[in-house]
Image 1 (cartoon, helix red, strand yellow):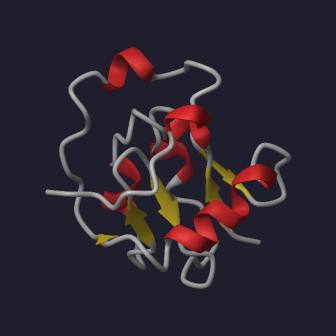
Image 2: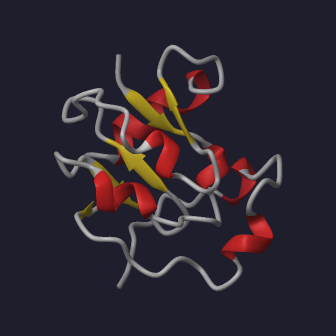
Image 3: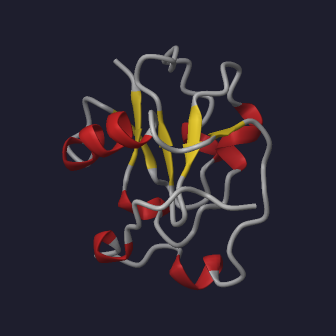
Length: 110
């Protein structure tokens, strides 16, 4: 089992999860984070840290449409080892459904 970042992260990208990950398996895109499934050690410490509740085990049905997105972009986006600044409007996007249309394949930029 591994953990997966779902669409709930899109446009929120709080990054609290990055701070607690003992293996630095988070990678950042323009609008969301992903977890590298081959690096995740399944410790689960990231899941309760996510204010957007965007991280779920891969056995959760909510993870299914996002497993390949996590796998693909974890090899293309930069690794995040420290919490950055979330988007200014992150709280406004928190909890909104149907955010998949706002996904961007572009990598995170400092």
